[in-house]
Image (cartoon, rainbow, N blue to C red; front, side, top):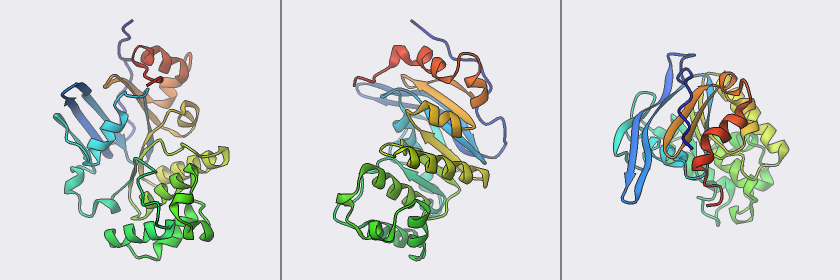
Length: 255
């Protein structure tokens, strides 16, 4: 059954200060098309929830935005430039795509200290971000191999915040967090946006996204199915109902 794209205002209408801009992004592989003409913006001072089933193209879009992959067509910019062209990008864009992509033999503190040195950030910042994400001094001195998934997520968020960026790009940051941790993350992201930052947040946790996001972009099968304010998309039957109505034909939850 085909579901047409929902006709709602484009994300970004609340502000002219677009920090992230996807314009006609298409990504084709030999085996098919991962993204097809994806366009949306993320304004300053907002959290944008990036929703879709497994395999919808969320991570591919984020990888293109962060310069890890090249699009077949279109552009994806941060603060008006390609990520690779930004001056010291880690100090402008904080990202977390894979909390497991850290050396297991290093301590959390060592991981952050190396990242700080690479960005030219004072190493004294390490203690500040560890405290901000709720990792104790003892946990910071522990080897990452002994971290739970939730602790790895906190460490990844700490690294994303290390350079005091104005943009955050986070792929499933709530995975492994307990209810207290999820509440902490919601407060952190809301505060970041309220202070003028922009957040692109990918998640499968619809209820949590609905509580923190100003805007939502819903994609399926590599295409934008709906985009608008959270209030607009949650109206009527609700966000969850809309999500299932639009994504059921492309749901890959069993993959």
